[in-house]
Image 1 (tube, rainbow, N blue to C red):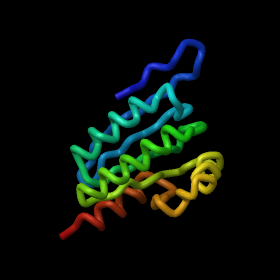
Image 2: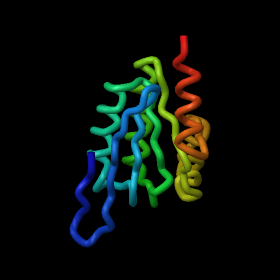
Image 3: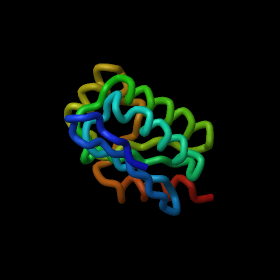
Image 4: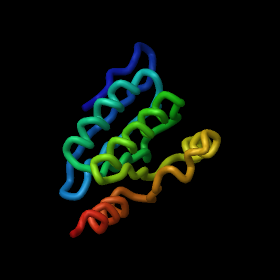
Length: 126
């Protein structure tokens, strides 16, 4: 899944990959109004495929409150499905926004996608 940027803006993309224990969403560019619909649709699809969703923010720039709301919504959906939404490599900017919105403890954060996948795999074992 990819989002189409508005004219004159840097390309923003959301790419979904499904692994055995989790769905991985890789976010590229600024996560704002132009990509929020795509982000929400990708989160919805990810939760339908796997209860554990990993959102890789390594290549993300800024994030706005609408997209933060989409992440919170995705986390709620994942938890209702018996999983969780894990964040990978949020930038200092994203971490500051999470703290400012008092969401810094709402998400488990990992340095790399493999670490998050390992955590999801360990959590989903019977």
